[in-house]
Image 1 (cartoon, protein in one colour):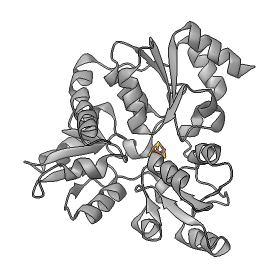
Image 2: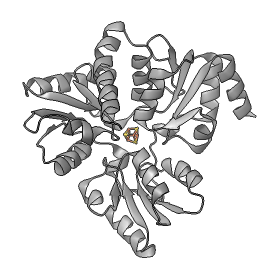
Image 3: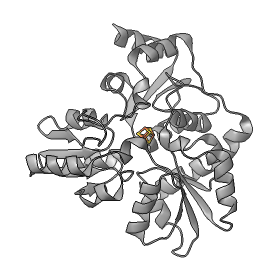
Length: 310
Ligand code: SF4
């Protein structure tokens, strides 16, 4: 059985397997830890394993390498990119920052290591609002790369952060019409939405939060039915934690498929995870200067999160 082989190889090689909630269910089941970007960063920074296999996308594996530079970090499929991270390229972003002197640069963790080297503090969707709020009300802030998350934080904090015009292809394509139709079919269902969704979707949401916040909310809620507007991989953990509740994936607008999957996240498979452990490749490499510069804003985020009790 491939699952046993993966576990045996990971033990032999003293490797920890970290998986994001958007990974396929079989990978979440075999992983040592499953979590959102903030949790993955914390585990990567604190693990005493000799190697990390990051089952997620490229920027997550880079973040693990930046936080644990002396450990080997592997990503089962090196092509597992992120459309949001790709929407913010270093040359254009450097020019954007230059056009806004005296601004503090806040970047979502969904960015390449190169963008993090130009950043003052990194955030995830679990801590973005609180970290933005930790700056003085009149602070001049740049927020990159997700315009939807930036717009959402501007709307709830009253800020006027300058936004980079990036977006995630998964969260941008939820269909308002299809969600409203589902609400008609399931009138008692609560709509849970990730802040990377467009504002028209957030307006009909009963609760807005990061992946782990949506999971916690659904677990604590007395409601029995939920329409979930984020990558559909999270439904696995929601259902595991709440076997008696119903979770309905919010559909995208451009497909006959009922759920919305991140094609990059789903590039990782059990077979690729096994091959990665066996052959010790693909591995993430970053030069020392990049690691040193990119570590600063990530460590600042972890310090602020701890200080704010997040
Ligand atoms: S769901 Fe969107 S933000 Fe998350 S990894 Fe996929 S493309 Fe990137």
